[in-house]
Image (cartoon, rainbow, N blue to C red):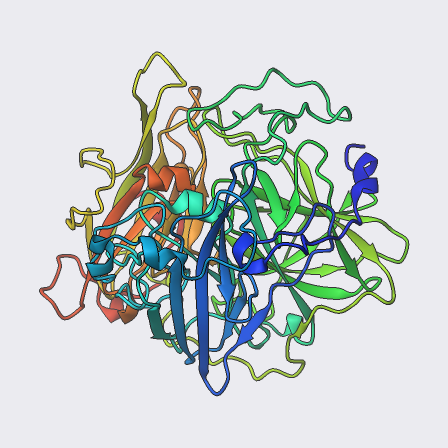
Amino acid sequence: MLFASLWIFHGHVSLHAQESPQSSCPRPSPGATVPEPEDLRSRNGVLKVDLTVRTFTTPDGTKRFCYFDAAGNQSPTLRLSRGDLLILNLKNDLADAPATVPATGNNINHAHNHATAAEKNSDPCDSSTMSLSSTNLHFHGLTVPALCHQDDVLKTSIQPGDPPFQYKFRIPENEPPGLYWYHPHIHGFSKPQVLGGASGAMIIEGIERANNEVAGLHERVLVIRDQDLLNPNAPPSKSEPVVPKFLVDHDGDAANTGTGFGKPAKDLSINFVPVPYPDYPPAAIQMKPQERQFWRVLNASAITYLNLAVLYKHAPQQLGIVALDGVPINANGTTGDFISWQNHIGVPPGGRVEFIVTGPPAGVPGLLVTRTVDTGLGGENDPNRMLATITATPDAPEPRSILASSPVPLPAPAEPWLGNVPPVRVRKLYFSETLLDPNDPNSATTFFLTVDGQEPKVFDPTSGVPDIVVKQGDVEDWIIENRSPELHAFHIHQLHFMLVAWDGVAINEPFLRDTINVPFHSAADLQYPSVRLRMDFRDPNTIGTFVYHCHLLEHEDGGMMGLIRVDPADSAQAPGKSTPSSRTRSSPANSTTSN
Ligand SMILES: [Cu+2]
């Protein structure tokens, strides 16, 4: 009922044409047709990109953060194949954002005048300057080295006024084909930058070579972001049931009502088309009737969970999942052109899902929605809401990109499937939170991600002392517990993992991920909720020092992060290292017991 009553809002398309695009970060209006991000494709094995990050403050005080390519496109999709070289020159133009739209032109040279001497002199590869106007890039999901100019976020920090900073690395020959993404990762300031829109998709081409079911399909890239509410003071839509009075949680966001309704903590947008509270006027997607398309969805939200569903006349449709977090779900090599058909898909912040969707028959109204996610007593409100209408018309324009129709299958992976490699050791980590005043649930919260047995501490970017030391070549099991009353999303850089148990119960999900939801703790639980992950440190590219953290960015910025160092395999032998002959299938029953 809720959704049907709101269809009338779609259909208005208007960019703010009078604004200078690069100075004002223009965004589409609510109800607009979902635009496709511009594609930047590698040529002859090289993709060269000039990217500038700018900021703009809207009249209501909202700060946008925007990536522009050389042609002025926002947040282009970077498309490369295995083995290709990426050369990305990132220019930081974040300084001194104007409070209102400048009268003319852009502020391209503005930053140079205001950078301090200290900023000008700092080495961007070894910078202790991390502020709201510093920036860098993380290539989320890629297994590339955590080195400066590649995928380091610990010391790399580019200041306004610095010359363009060059990222330069080759996509590994064994990188799974799928959807990855880029975003800034400045400790303490990730949330405002990502919430402001600093994110973009990255595609490693060739997924049709991994799964022939998607060969020849048109593909659609959908980037879902969150942002501060456009109408924070509006009462809920009259079509909603009345829910308890709004409460504000310790992050200052609308607290979880647990009802599926009420004011959300953040608005969502789909390819920058906002879908604002309270009426959620959906964006618009057109498809040809019953056309099969391949949708690649990135949850680039700072804090918002998604639970995606496609409804035709209110009935949930089957969505054919092909890949999670950039890795085809048949990468285990045993299931052929396997598709997992589901009628809804949860996607934590930072996660990706790629699936086949069949358009509605002509005349049948369709909707892309996100269903409510119960984030826990301490979590943010994430109600049911529409994202886009799906309208079937014979003359619907096709998405720009189409997957090859007769692909050459990918070579088999050189390494044994992760699920068949027994872990050499088990570690336990836990998420926890403490209130400044234990008697006041609205007092400031401190966020921790702690290795069991160590003292909980807020992440210190200057410490340099790893919380975990691992040997390259090893496979480990990590049990991640949640001892807090809200959801957290565990993410680790430079590698993927496999979920082997949920709350201590072995599960059969032989897929790789790089971001996973960890269920919240309730007072009634007899034990802390947990996930058990098989962590893959075999790739030589994972050597180095990097981070794992909660991907709810206000938690990450608050210190819910840890440091890991992966030592080369040929350094001093660690106890308990596995030998190649020990690679046998581990039974799921065993995998839940050792601890
Ligand atoms: Cu968290």
